[in-house]
Length: 105
Length: 105
Image (cartoon, rainbow over all chains, first blue to last red; front, side, top):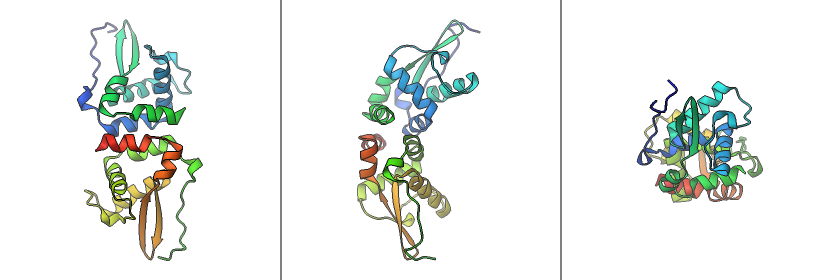
């Protein structure tokens, strides 16, 4: 456990589904996470965010975002670092992320 | 019953919430309804659509779309006619509907 060889599953770009992405972004907490990732463009951990939820709920939200292909996670030691899959989203659904981030600002 | 005085509640433009709109559009059947309304720009009834669901499920989907402010419904006799609230959506969330419709095409 806790090594970088643990397998974290991500859908390929071609597998991204619009419905799953919209569902992932329909939750205010998940949208806040994505907005912060978009602003920072850095790798973040769950603990980086001032979110009004418990750690386990936070972990759940990150999992939904990852399963939908909105974020990519990698392990560094025991820490999961998350980044926004901006390029993949833009290629699959042009303009979508920006319109959603703009609307949520 | 069945008169045009029956009250159908719609959120005002200012009340439209991004999360509710994204949730409403995250379902493939609802997205199909919205895409058909967008193409036709006409008033449609539930029965106008070749949807792979029962009538009661269809009614439910229209209700979710109406509650989120995506469509407007009015009664004509006993028929509910639906239109897309394209202008309201565009004003509140510029570019959002087009990017979603483009991605779903």
